[in-house]
Amino acid sequence: MANRSRKKRKTKINRKTTETKISGELVVDGEGKADIKTGIGFLDHMLTLFAFHGLFDLKLRVKGDLDVDMHHTNEDVAICLGEAFKKALGACMGIRRFGSSEVPMDAARAKVAIDISNRFAYEGIKFPTYSGGPPNLSDIRSNKPGENYSMEDGNDFLKTFAQKLGMNLHVDILSRSDMHHMLEAIFKALGIALDRATEIDPRRKKAIPSTKGVL
Image (cartoon, rainbow, N blue to C red):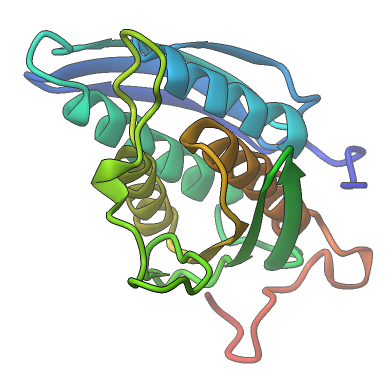
């Protein structure tokens, strides 16, 4: 369990472009409370799971050009979330830095491993080896009417989030299922792994978690 006795790490979220307007707040040392309205119902669901299982308090209000498509909104929310974590963590004093989690969701199973290193690395969602090679992410979509979110959208979100936070992010699908369950397992695992990585190690609470002395 994370150390909740110290001053809470938190920040406001604000971004305004010709494509999106985003506001909100992130509390890293929270209780898992989520109040999220991005205009993309599936993304709201994934981020609510991420916040709940990561014990982050997250509020988001988004107005995007969804009449064009969901790409701008999906990407800009990821930009804001990555930048918010980076700002709230500051110099990353005392954090454990590394975190991983493996989560099942019915027939799906995902593993997420991260390193908050101030270096970006992400190779995309990796699938188990089957004959015929890996699937095309753009072909894996929700089968629910009116829900157009895809694995490719989720992959784009994760890449942008990791880039703006400055972390290594590795995502493996260990057991395939439908898109909803695979992404749900990923976002739950991401929340848990990030909670572990941002937890304060009491043995190193006033030190940078790097032999270089800086991240």
